[in-house]
Image (cartoon, rainbow, N blue to C red; front, side, top):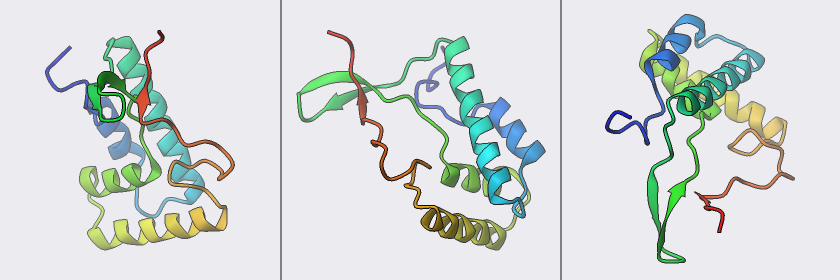
Length: 128
């Protein structure tokens, strides 16, 4: 495993997907599909390359644990459009405003889950 891969999210394969498919004028359905594609690809890359999440210090139990595996959020996808495509800052900001409006209208939390679902844990506990 290369140095820094435990924290890395934007692998070259993901950047290529963003550059190929991403555009600031995409619909919310297309944006959500892009996020799903990026998240699935990230999980597959980390699994095939056997990249474990970084170790974190838990202030509550005073022990080291593996952090939760990284994922790609819709906001990260939007910011990646601004970072890896020729989209202007105003186009990215407009897309982010549309996403926030869509999220509130459909009562989604920041992780694209309905409010009834639990939020993911901060740390992935090792089995005892």
